[in-house]
Length: 115
Image (cartoon, rainbow, N blue to C red; front, side):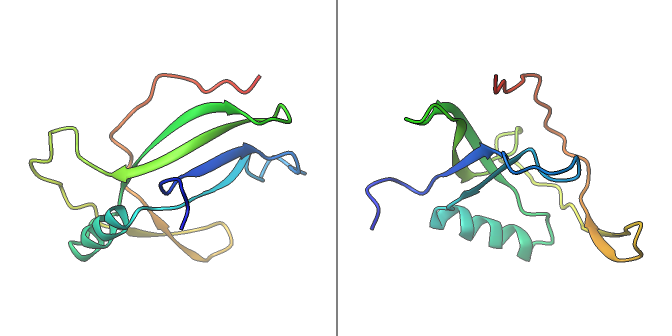
């Protein structure tokens, strides 16, 4: 058992070979209460959401990264009512079906510098 609560990291992708590859890579561990809430959202037909928070950090080697933590998502209305968001299929340029999510209602006006 880890001495730290479930968390994650997001690092600059130094192996990026072209513009279609991600700028950042990482992973996150989800606490049990978050997983249970995600499952409950799915059962209601909603697109599952979790709240993520991050802190800018620097490794001992001098590499900058984000330290992440996931929490149960609570709507801005204080948890009154979650409007169901249904997944809608969308086709890709290659003719495959993919999941399309409803536009995010939360906006962020800050930037995360990785200078």
